[in-house]
Length: 357
Image (tube, rainbow, N blue to C red; front, side, top):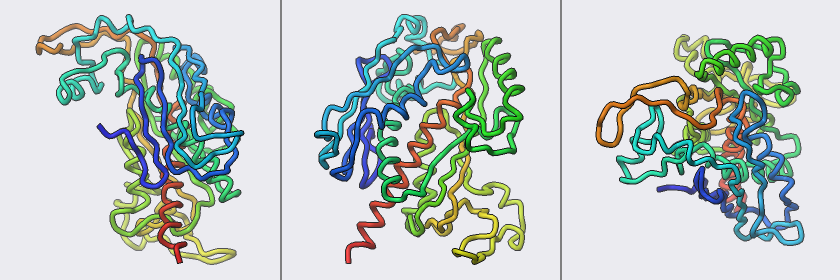
């Protein structure tokens, strides 16, 4: 089982949803960078459960503990180990499904591959594993911000169900429980989500990620394409079912003269409308990188469903426990973190090749 992500800046994730703790080992963090638990906690607080009445009511403080790699408030260049202890597991909520394959979950595939599974909250396949990614992303963000002071990564809920939100107010994202960027659409959308939740159902949507003022020249032209690594990172996140960069699929509907995006020059050379999402030929152009990620509705719903057990017998299923009716708000900091990990990894790879001589 692969638990490590990245080539130069690497994270190794460990732990289960209902185990004692989850955590991460971070390799190749530069030395002498100021780093404390507060730097990481701010990002974990954005991901943790129980933030509002449209997230799972599981109460976890998700307090991080740095175990190694930091001395007197500075990184030492050695492996950084960080853990978050689980405190509010309710494993009995899953006792009725220990032999049942939940619809649209990883249960069947995991059991078929390994012959054993931790049914308590999904074990290793639980989205609680993403704690490790957010910790790694918090460190990556800090490194990137120090190296490129004008650089920024942010995400927001671009659509919920069939409702697409046109306006983007970056300052509004962290002021609402859905992490929407369109204030005009928030109240009506929140009511829709609550109505779906109250019926025992769930809903999905898309998250858009934007990387402002990225370095030019990240990525490689063949198997190390920047957008390919971003797609890999996003698709590794639980519940993600699609990735589209720039104008994406709509470009396939246009003739070449309409899909082409001319370069223009004012203070810098850039593309006229950034149709390709800031990456051409696998290499960043310096335009803002932007892409969307499709996230399915939460698979754990309280509505009665049909499934089968490990014996292949059809069973009636009611999933109990505590689950998000919509995953998008908590997915935003996870997807931002994975983006930061990819960008920093490519910054380090670029430095290894192009800054050597």
